[in-house]
Length: 330
Length: 270
Image (cartoon, rainbow over all chains, first blue to last red; front, side, top):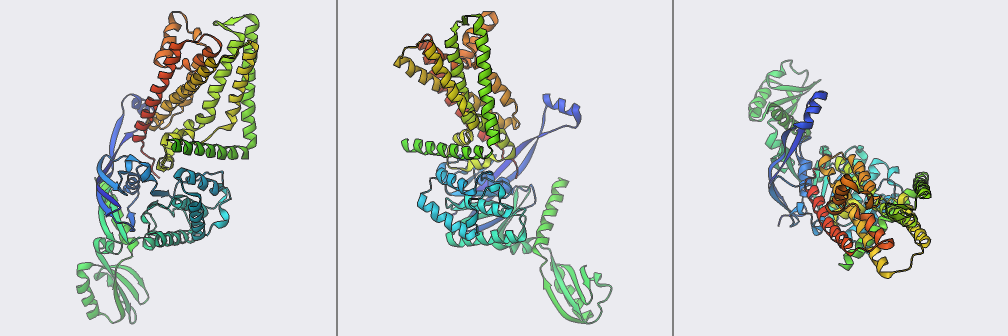
């Protein structure tokens, strides 16, 4: 049975449009203009227990709004959702006891106190048994390698250490569902990898369901088997990460290594994306790969040849760019 | 029910402990805050001592009765400032930044967490000073112990504090729509200005209707007047009943309004 079921979830915001200048500001006191912003438009999907799913999309696509509706923070304008068997925006205590939301850009720990004090307060709020609390805290500090830092004031921790403490705070009550909104934002590569490893390790130990939004493809590649691509509040792809290239990658890359100097007029085969010494890379429409490859092999002398998919990040960036252009045009 | 109450009481205790630890870490700020409050009460007492040097009664209140009233106001106001004021003040900022998210995610009553998560220890001495002033006034007027009056005083003092809290919650809830709510402080100042004087000052063609409005429609004047009157002047069962009823209605109304406000929360983008 799915842990999350979403049907036609929609969120529309009414946004005040401020007019220019002082005159406009005064006019705004009496008559206001509003615009409807469709943050999420009729999204439907379901997620099974134990899955690790990524929400991908450009800024303003509706990823965070969807996460916030799933966690019950905001009410949808239309549609239905069932998370852990509850309607999230009814915010029942039994529901809130079973999930956690981590936001990379915000922190819930008390800034001036050691993280340990915030953990103790969370123990009280969630009603965690003292013995279980100690065991979970020991397990999490060990996985994250921060045993020695829980008595240090949060404001004195590095960004990476603070994120680890935020993760511990989110996992203390052993949630069945973990929602992560850009958990590695602003972290250096070492800290990013450390967080990814910890999340992976925790998932393997506890089988927790995770939904992640991130702008770092490395996070997604390291953690998620399934990806939902959202643009303009609509779901445009739901499937494995590798499938994105099949779905959106209209091109393939032909990598060529010439024996001797390559000819100058390689662009007659397609877009030349690289040309260094005997090596060249040509971008070709998928449907034309066989024909172009045939011509090259017939006309050129090659030491090596291969056909590969373009890098995933490039494909996704293209999807986002096209979506933004469509949006701007609309 | 008892278990839930115990849980919330324990939680409040822990929150109070942590905020004390935090405030003591910045002891300079803490000491200045306490000193300002003590000085403020001192100025107030000196002012009314000067007034009573020229007259025996003020709006029908004798000097010790009036100082009991001032003490009662200080205690109610001190309780509100210590327990709720800072939290309610910060609410607009939580809405603006979206940090309210973390409070709404916790499996606990949102109203409790929003309005009680911090204790402002710097204003706590006001409560003690208020009770000391009330005690001194009772000794000065040669007050005879009366269990009924004490019970009614305690009940109406609690009601007055709850009514103040409800008004503060109503004003606070507006932050969800207004996002920037600096006017909250000004409205609260108006509220406490009305509550800090005996209701007898609202007399005459302009004052009497105001007195009526702020007693029966927007019951601000009952907050300090009713417990003080019950203890040191006349005991009016009708107005005591009105205070209790107003408390229950306001508790219900302010909670509904707060919940309605939360439904409109938009959670600022991350």
